[in-house]
Length: 221
Image (cartoon, rainbow, N blue to C red):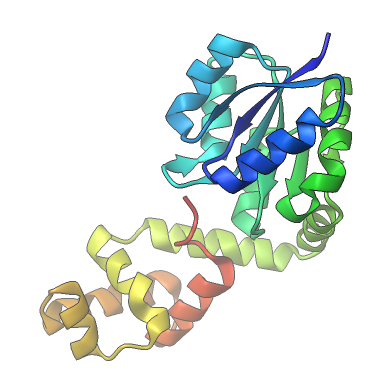
C-alpha cells in the first residue's frame, strides 16, 4: 500500500512542485490538498492520509492552529510534517507545542521530503538542518525566549487601536503622520504611544518598535 500524503499549502507553485516530486517516487500517493485551515478537517475525513505536509503560514490563518484543532478532535492519527519558508521564535515554539513529526524548510523540500515522510510514518522526526540549527540556538538562548514572552504579553495587553499604532512604528512616522495614516487624532495617537511604552517598559516608541521587529510578533498568522 502506498503512503497516503495530503498537502496543506496555499502557494500553487509549492503544491505543484510537491506533487511532481512525489509522483516521481513509487510508493507514495497524494490523496488531496487544502489551502486554508478550515479545509484541513474535511480533507482528513475524506481521504484518511498517513502524513500531512502542512505550511505553518496560510493566507487565511495558521496551519499550526489547524493541526492543533485536528488533534484536539481526535479525528485523525495522521502524522504531521510542517513546512516553512521563514523561521522565527514563535513559529518554532508553536510548532513544537502543537506536536510535530517533522519540520522542513521549503528550500529543502526537494531533497528531504521523502526522508521526512518515511520517518514520520515510523514515528521518528526529521528536521531540515536549518530548522534544527535554529531550534538549537533558541534553546541555548533562554534570555531571548523570555524576552519574546514579555513582548507577546505586552502586545496582548494592548487594544486594537494601540496595536494599529504599534504596527506602524517601525516605519519611523511622526505623530502627525501616524494620525493621518490611521485616520485618528493626534491626541489619541499620543495616548496610544504612552500605553505602548508602558506595556513594553521602554522609554520611547522606537525601542518598542525594535522589540516588535526583533521577535516578529505582529507578523504571524
